[in-house]
Image 1 (cartoon, rainbow, N blue to C red):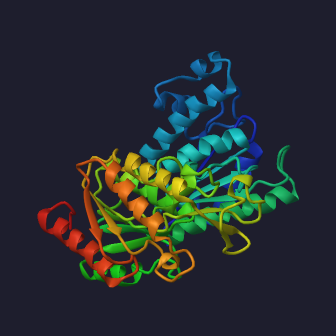
Image 2: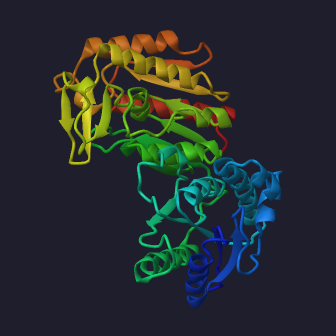
Image 3: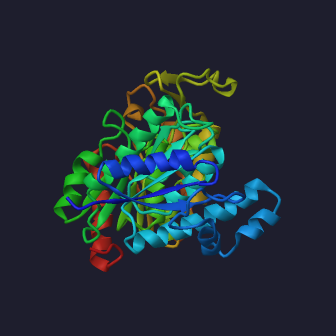
Length: 410
């Protein structure tokens, strides 16, 4: 097995002991290390492979400019920009195989930018005093970022923090050795969905797309799944997206913490990726199940899915707002968009006879969406339910036509 190289990033003026410990564990396990200093004021005890001056210069600035700003937030953003650009370039040059970044809130802020600059599959580990904290919004996390809490290490090394640091060092090296990178020569289709108790279209669509020669990745529409999907869409990773469950957009529109961010339903269109869209489970907003339900939902039907997640059923006014949010996001697309609108329901629980069936609410939602969608977006209103075979057949009909005319590259 060839040796793997890990890039160790942090403020070497104040955390050289901790960063040095990470490096020593990586080397003891047979890995190689390159180091990058992202500090501003101080100097490291020993020189790093990439200095703070290299970092600032990569972003078109300088350490003196950062110091002269007189603001630590502005200074760290200078370093975050430079580090993101430098790390991205070094990876393309083959300098390292994985990256590990250590920091408190300042270092974590920088680390989130740096890891987002790297492609899917490059091992990315953040050792942070705020790992898993609500301080970190979903939209700042790269699709495959790993985090571990930097516990008990605020003022130097000790047995507690060494336990975390050594795990992180071993994890990033092990990931670099084990990772199977995506095949760039096999076109990838991204699909958004929920589990089959709610949405079943993946069951026929996935094998049908694979039979056509495509790799298929299905993302769970529970906030982080949509974030990963949008992150990859922004990178142009998909040949086409089947964004058939857009519930996270409703979550965002109505203020839920289970959100994929403000750019949900935009990145495929902005990056030029063709997209087939259906507003699966549009009528539900998911909220955090272990928190008290907000007063604004008090008179709404709700379902505790488990101890983590509760679903709120939207009223008519709220559904119309979700329809308009779809139109506003899709209007930003520069690539072909086809919207498929099943008239008999958009989730298993809103079928005729099911608990959430509300034909008047569904009709009003579909009418509002049709009315507000930009004229250049193709609309396909079809007399079926989203989980019926006719829906999947329509999606494949559109997809096949796009493959034939070159809209989707094979």
